Length: 494
Image (cartoon, rainbow, N blue to C red; front, side, top):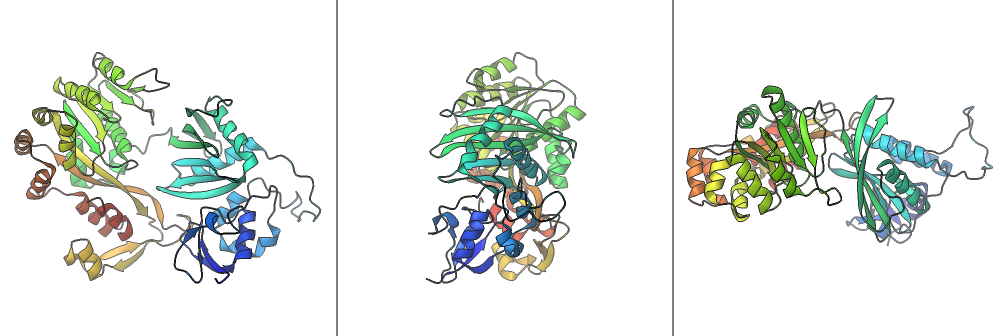
């Protein structure tokens, strides 16, 4: 096999070909991660670098300044170079190169290293920071706009100190390494004058404890309905039902589709326009909202979900938000609350708004109870938002228009991702929601009582010309909010 290899580092570019020896040097220097993809010049198949002989046992050399690879640094992103340079001493205080004789290696500043990794995650707008142990190294990854990026490769001997530092911040037991733990803390970024609430979860694995940090901004000024990406028609429909006095509004979609964000935005809108007593039951509380009583459950099994729900009904609430309907007990209490004059917000896991009705019936709810309480079903997805500064226009081809089920759109202007500093050469900046609304009117109520199935509900939506996820996705595409590739990913669920 040819010794020339291509590789990708997650910035959308393909580099190479380079000889395997050069890839090994980059791996040792921390430029090439075990999770990056590589491909031999004679093959069309991409593989993970860790599975290529010669790259699988690479480790970081503590204190390495990487001067031998100075000329090759242009092959990686500027951000990657910044991250990999954390804590390294390539120059002395006078700006001159350090002498070739290296001083004895000093132990790394674990506190500074952990703070720097949190800062990188914050500056990149990451939702999560992962510290993942492998057999010989520890990978530090962040999730930006739903995608994982490897930002750091640490020697294995630094894994326990890093995890212990985050455990201390999260008030976990640093001596316990065999049981899962969770906690939370608030971290301040002095330069940006921002505070971020961070939820931590520690999970023991075969190679060590895996630490996951979820970054939750304390400032919730962006948790408003008009910033979620709803069209005017969708926004008006949602606001109409979110301001009613009783009934049940259910969000649906896969994990990570933005259901909780929409629920929080709905509560803030309700509180601002129709003040009242709002109580939530969550596992866990993701955002603190002023004026809302938020109960966190399942903390060390001391507060049970159903117990809290039963007690909420005795607390004189006007609005109840249940983080997720999980079983018959939780849905039964939600139904009873809606029947007794409360407005209930919650979420389910189904593929479409039409599927909510059949899912509730499958969970044991009587069809007449569904018809009497359900007011609005909302299906939601998230797609990456195109960077407005570097997006590139082009015409939609006939084949692409046919694949979208809209041949008449051939020649329409759509946009593709470009590259600029604002989006870190990714072409996307943030995410936008795709929505589908199903209001429960009198006609649909009669059909629910008659035990209609999901297909019949979908047919009813087409009869009434209600916009589906498919339609909202195409509208976002034509508006330049997202790209064709992102839209096709949403349509797989249809």
